[in-house]
Amino acid sequence: MRKIPFSYALASLLVLALVVWLALGNFQGFQSEAPEATEDSDPESRVEVVEQQSIAYIPEQIVQGQLTAQRETALRANATGYVAEKPVDQGSRVAAGDTLLVLDNDALAEQLQQARDELALAEAEYAGARNLRQRELISQPELLRRQSALSASAASVAQLQKQLDDSRPTAPFDGVLNRVTVELGDLLQPGEEWAQLVDDRRLKGAAWVSQQQVGYLSVGLPVTARLLNGEQLEGELTFISHRAEEATRSFYIEATLDNPASKRLAGGSAELTITLPPRQVHSLSPALLSLDSEGQLAVKHLDDNDKVQQTRVELVSADNQRAYVTGLADPLRLITLGAGMVDVGETVIPVTADDATIASPSEHSSDAPAEQDSVHAPVD
Image (cartoon, rainbow, N blue to C red):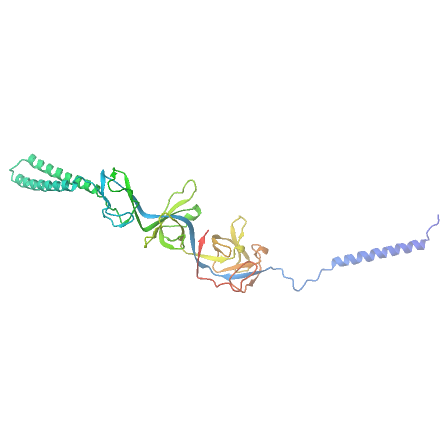
């Protein structure tokens, strides 16, 4: 076998070593060289910020209610008798004390007059007996007999007067005589219902509210009832149940509503709007609400040192356009863009928004209305 010349082998080894040295030398040199820093690099994030003040917000609770008359009673007979007169027609408006019905009283008026005459005689005899007793012309038992006769006469008058009153029932309060169910000649028995009396000058709006809603209510709050035809009645909250219904865990409430025109509304339904006390809230886009580490609603904002803070809030009300929350500082540096890209405690560069009214976290409406001094809105 022919051997390779020593000179050729040495040349090949030198060429191979040169190639390896060139390759390793360039790679190590590349690794040792630090990259040049760019002049426009920014280690801090930028966020858009709006400085805003809280506003006076008037929350409302809207519930579905049932309207009834403020006062309504069933008129029942207290005596036995035939219907002799119907001085008031069905549907007529009456005043307290007006006679509504007359029963055949079997000469009760004459019997009452006789009893009154006997009472007058008994009073005169008792007065004379007292005078005689003072002069000791009659005994003490005789005076007591005259006093007993006087008491018996007074009791007879009272009994006959009651019987006469029961035969002529009167209106216990102002109202409308509703649904008269008897005719002339009908026989009434004690306890039998013969009509209804309804006072519809004021109405009662009854409704049920949830456990979450009842805590905001108090007696005396303004209430507006919206009828099916669009008309409204004004009133106030007059009763809040102290115990929830077991089946629904809801609380019964009542509102008294003025009905000056005495419209026929009792028994119908209405939408009751309860105006709650005003509260100071911050108005923002619902998209700016987030959840904190405990799953509670919160809002991200900046402190005076441009550090990101996250504060838990209470949602008072919300719709598709706005959310109204409490629990934030006043004034507030609200992050409107970039809140999802920064962490709590991070220092950022704030950029002031052009418009103080926020429409969404990604855009601002140039024709949005100016912030109002107060806002009315329902509580969901």
